Length: 322
Length: 308
Image (tube, rainbow over all chains, first blue to last red; front, side, top):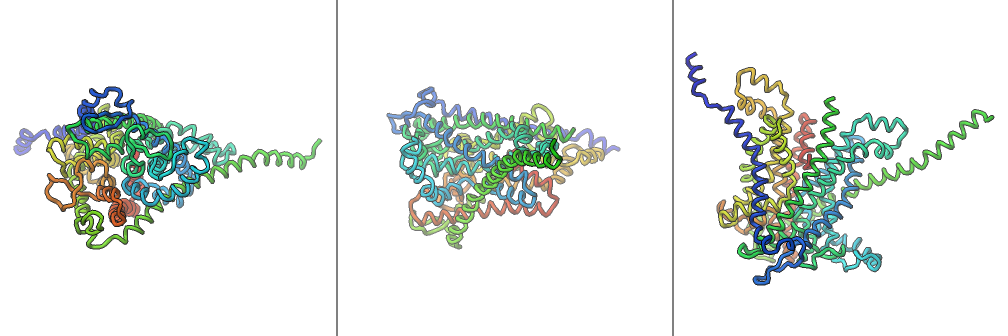
């Protein structure tokens, strides 16, 4: 009795402490994000003051002291163009994979989905190394030269001489890298479509393809768009493989004009020049400014994607609970 | 007046007209779907084959243990890079796992309100942040603060990549622990933190372990944030305050050199990295496919496919 009372009187409010620690750990992520946005904005201040809006719209990139001038437009465009091509190639393939896995018998589908997941586990740097020494040769000989020879005169974006380290090869690598992301999410989304819908379509005599068209796609549209945007987010932020394959042009020549021309993305210019940039000059603030733009683009893309995907999956939870 | 057999023949031909086109379309789309699977498998196969074919030849005891030789000679090895990767993963885990686990505990046990949902949402968004931006952040906060490149900065950057993954998997595996376990603990008069640590966390430890290992697999291949934090070096460990090498960084440096010997060494480093990462991934799969599996499969989907 005595011991218990003493215990109660002097006991620490451990549960309160526990809760406070947990809340602090939860808030950590928000603090990090806020601090990150603030720091990147703050440290890139000099470049915004000097260049103003022309930092985003301009295309000069000169780090020589006295003639410093920085414009990030070619890199922003390079990011958007490579990511866009990667989406155009990667999204249909990924959705095809998700369709296959959702239809195939388990004994085929499980190994394939595991192998596709392995694609996500391979690090970006290995994609880049493979791209540089294996993929580049194959692409150059079997795809880029034929395209250039047959279509170079007629279609402008095949017109420049292929080199293998260009916007086209970087886009294809990106497409390969976003396939596991998009197909994993689309797989989840498609399995969230209620069985009743599929059975109803089959009952009306639909073929498999018509079942997808009638039952799954209309139902899963939002989620599939969200999955694609998640892939876009990954393509935009991807660094190493792109840096190794895009050819790293700087200045006005980095404007994407043709597919077979060296380019530059926001992440690749940071990876290439960050170490050489002297903190005293405007070069470092310029690169941090590029990072800030990249961060904003990535945040917007990912917020939109997560809203779309979670909307879709919340519907799924509702059905399970009902 | 048609006889019934004529009628049947007519219907059959109408049916065939209707169905034949649809079946052809169906066949074509199924072919496209199958070919898209093959399209995705080709690069994976090619990467694995090339990495192992070219890399295994480069491996030797010397290659794995020595410091890099003079540039272009092809002498020396990747000893410091392997050591650096191990140290940096250890430090990042030390910084990232506790806070990730606590954050997961918060989301699962206290997260059923607006603040909790906000944290969960931004946690998911943060998982997709470009790693190079996280590298810049670590550079600005740690490297500029200390005044030099260091292991601390690299480990901090990697811990930021790691902890949202750990937090999310911890949350998901805690949610799978039945509420009755918690109630049983509380009914015995245990405090909530004792219930959480002794009962809930130990019931959920398999799922958490999966998450932690997958996060380790993810960060062991990260290159971009290391460029501006640990910088790279050709010496063995010389203190937490100094630059250090890491496997992905070494592969990148080697890829910038024009020599054939550098290419060989690059493949060698790549095969070491791939073996580490694949053994983590496949090991988890094997381990959990032999144990109770449906929930760990779900967990694997969360981070294995990296998303959701």
